[in-house]
Structure formats: C-alpha cells, structure tokens
Image 1 (cartoon, one colour):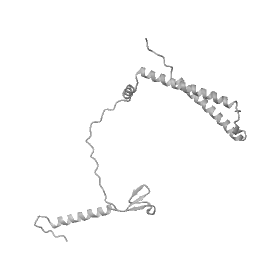
Image 2: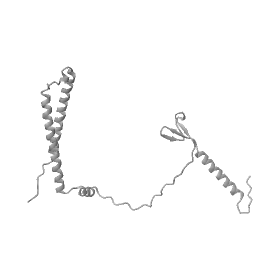
Image 3: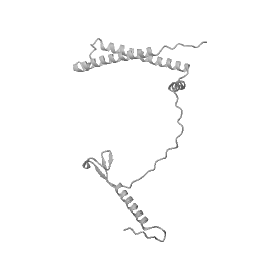
Image 4: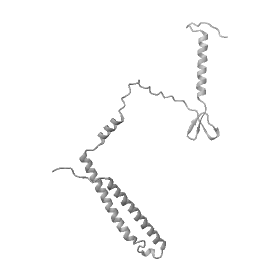
Length: 184
C-alpha cells in the first residue's frame, strides 16, 4: 500500500515511489539496450537470421554522438534557366578565336605526322610480307611453324596498320583545314 506521508522537505512518499519506479524502468531500458550484438559477415545486427553463421561480439559501452542542428531555412536561390546556364558556360570555356585556330593547326599537324608514319610502316610491312610469302629466316628453315606464325603476325600487323590509317584519315577529315584570316 502506498502511504501518503509528508517528509520534512515537502515531498510525499507517492512521489518518491514514482521517481524510484521511473529510475528502475530506465535502468531496465538500458539493460535491454545492451542486447547481444552479432556480426554476420559485413553486417552487424541484434537479430540475426541464423545465429550459427554469426559471431557474437563482446558487450561494449554505447557511444552517442549528437548530430549538428540544421540551420534555419533560407529563401531558395533562384534557379537559372538551362539556356542561360549553357550560354554562360560556353562563354567561360570558349577559347579566343586566334588561340583556337592555333590549337587546331597544331592538332592537324600532329595527326598528319602520325598518318605519314603509319603509311611508312605499312610500306615496310607490305614489302616484308611479299604477297604472303616472306623470305624465310635461318631459324625458320627447320621450324616451319615459326615461319607460319611470323606470316600470320605480319598479316595482322598490316591489317591493324590499315585500320590506323583509315582512322587517322577520318580524323583529318573531321578537323577542317585552317585558313589564315590575318591581314598584313
């Protein structure tokens, strides 16, 4: 039974009993929060689907890290239209016309040199291939398979070089010839 007596400090026994009850409930909540925790592969859980495949971890102190509070809501920033955004970015990243012409000329020159080297390489490979019957080397006279391997390697190199030449020609067609607009 609950007796409602007054103590000298003014609290009633009923209030002290309620306080004691709430402290004991809180302690039980903390005790239940310290349930067993299992590691199942890369997952940590307190309710594993199969306890045999999980490892029980030693109980540890619970650490609570308070998060940051969100800042008060501000007025949203105006969203620029897509057209104005594209125009601004084009203006920012567009090089000067003279500088761009110089870059285009330099790129076209490099591709032209690569094309010349590929054509020279193709000429050498075609001469060595000799219509499918290249000259046998001394080491290949006794090992016919080595000769056949070299012939197939030459044929593959010729095909690859031809594809490279076609690719470089397409690149040159894609890059327009630069016409100088300077006046003396």
